[in-house]
Length: 196
Image (cartoon, rainbow, N blue to C red; front, side, top):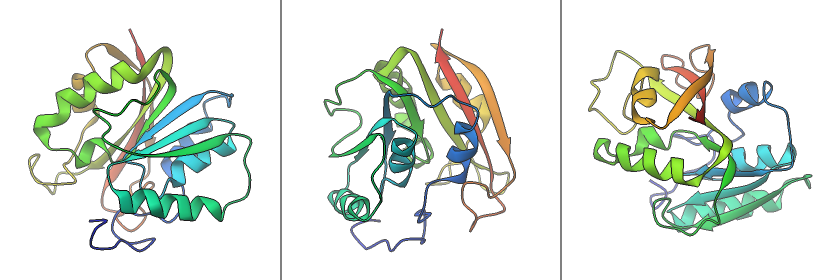
């Protein structure tokens, strides 16, 4: 998708931090800690976390996405935290784990279904024992078959079932279209997980 060109506010580029993240983070105390955003695109969400004091790592496989992220970040005001853009494979890159917060935003739903167990294992490996995983469950819909994607439809029980060594601690249900206003027919929720 990035290779074909992805202007801001088209397809899955919100052009700004996810409102779902903003709403969820309103319930989590800000702190100077390390955060990871996989499949970060233009790093809008990583930047938002940096405004809250996090030192955020934004990783994306696409060199174009990373270049666009750095270009966008150069135009933003300074923050109390930092953003580091990493071009690499989430499953293989040396990311200097652990992270205190992982924000999974449309990364899981973009992966092939066969990679889900690997995603759960890798996410657990990267998360600090006392850290928080915030998983955006999106798209929630009955209009697409479960194997139709990407994006592949997700449900809260599906994500919970993948994370066998974590427990769900909070669920922030949101109005349809909160994360992706251009897709108001899709449901979305943010679920917070901690390691057992």
